[in-house]
Image (cartoon, rainbow, N blue to C red; front, side, top):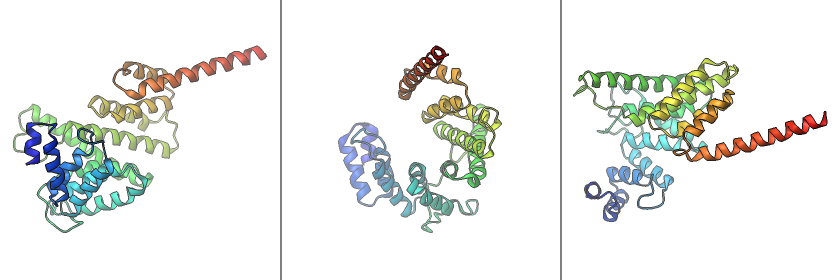
Length: 274
């Protein structure tokens, strides 16, 4: 009922309350819906931890997507990374044999999307050390390539009924971001200077595409990589081009201006001492 009311009025307090009661009453679908609502601040101040609790409960009751979304949002917390990785490993086992089986609970799930698993697993692995980067790259590039294939099929009118779970543009953009971050880490671990690293150049391309496809966290990563590669002019141009849409751009421009002013003063003082 809550979901129906929310479809009719996206700001309905009555709908929110029905969904909240459904979640706390033990409904798996209610838990997921309530979790997503707690990730924004439409009805109440955003509470990511409560959302994580809902996703985890839904997952442990048999819904794989609950665990996947739990890992997707929880992996940024260092104390939860190990748990996220363990969960994702447990539900990815023999996916081709029984793709609807939740290997944490042993129960069947009717809502399994292996693409979501690839994204969560690839992103989670990218946060770990050098030994996990190759596997992270495998999952992320698999998702990226499948998205390109999906686009070709759609352009040629061949996608109807052939794709069980379509990869969304948002998931594609996030995969590009995590892949870019994976490449940066690989470049750093290799010991090659970022200025000359092919991985760093490819990462720039991935992050730029990620941002262009709507994943905003990629913007700051793209700027930072440009700056670390000593492409300062390009980094500043990127900030100036995006001042109206990126909140961090104004702060960065201000910081760079202050830094440059200090450098000019130091240079002048140095010349005066000669």
